[in-house]
Length: 453
Image (tube, rainbow, N blue to C red; front, side, top):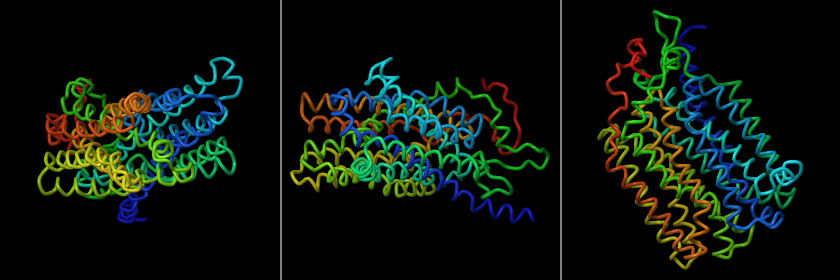
């Protein structure tokens, strides 16, 4: 078979890779959100209060945040094929164990509440390893002018996962019991892991997909060596000093803290807000709780395309920065109005669009990380997404506390303020400046790793 044919197959493979990332992301969110629906049954069965349930929610997000950096580093070092396979099987096993978290012998050792907390924490560990590795896949496979759009597959997957979870889990719980929903989610995850390991590679093989993907750090066959560029980059030491002293990295991380807070409010409390505050039934609330996730599935591609087009026309500073500021400011306005409108259906529409705007903005966060770090994008994505999950860890517990003492309007106003701050921080982020801007282009020559420690 000719090399042209091999390359032709490679030109089609990025779409399969992106579709797999979409499926991975759906499963990630399915296994994250399922407990927020099951909480309606778990709380009375085990006598958990709202704040205790919020702590269980936060345990997953804490493990998820804690393992962002190790997960990103492993993705850079070992390759996304192995890391994503291990990650999804890991968290699927503990998803299944959630169904028996309240049973002996674990509860006899540490109590029912702590048993749930530990198991959800361990699910977060697996998901935390996966998410930054998604961005390493994008760095390996996509051109600079396609990165935000590619990121939208991951973010849309989160939206789809969040959208289908409430009605699916509610139906399974009513039909088969809440425990069965966790077994089904676990089985789906294991199947996805097997397909990923069997049919994907870490990077393209054969001729280049496009000429400008050389700049993106995508694997390129070196005519003078049996090693690929991707393998050379995989052996490089992470330049921790350059990364950890770069203002862009920390500003993006800080912005992600506030963006993650907003996203987590919709993930964990929107369903119960609809039932307890807006008066919807359990099934009705589960149906309308899909709204923010449907918007989160539909808006990221528009955000990604807009960002990439603006980058092509005006450069990275206006393209990436303008997209984030615009979408996050719009999200803040929509959340402010959402709780104040008397019509519950108009409120759902506003909240849904507000959530979708957050996810549309995040396409530029992910693309900017690849823009400024390239071959270490998994590691740096781990740092910045850890920020999102610091905010995500706080929101499930802080939101009901604010609502209890000051009302739901105040709790949602705080979320709107967080969205606005997340956008404003981008006024001082410089997406056009690379962390390793003084290092020669790896795509043109093999360079020593001296000085990268």
